[in-house]
Length: 144
Image 1 (spheres, helix red, strand yellow):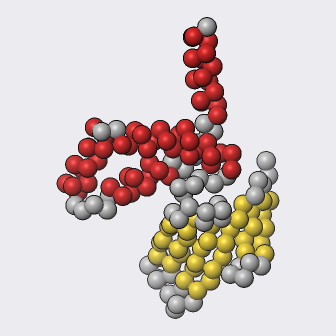
Image 2 (image 1 turned 30 degrees about the vertical axis):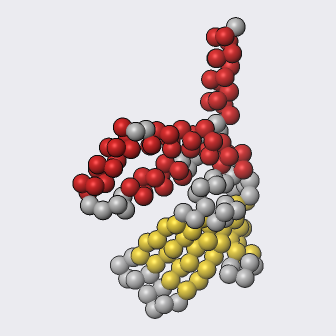
């Protein structure tokens, strides 16, 4: 009986934990470690957080709780505020930030300083691009 309950519990944990997620907690912790200083300090802290299983706990929380929330709601609570920035050789840049509602706001800047802002929203199988005023610019339907 105990083995059956244990097997059912293990199967439900695997099933209910959703599928592949963003692992935001683990990645934020790892990114924070990279900001501490030089490579020696980063390596020492990284080693210490593996000995005291900080990385393991963050990974487990992501896997069991946060990725499950992300699977069922479409948005990871810790992923809000994640940002991305890239600039090309000509000086054009794109900056993006993930919003709490799961949308993505991007700002495109040309080398001349002209800016354009766009927000991407995704529903189950539709992606909408909205301009800075919230007007629909484009819509793409994802085929399943």
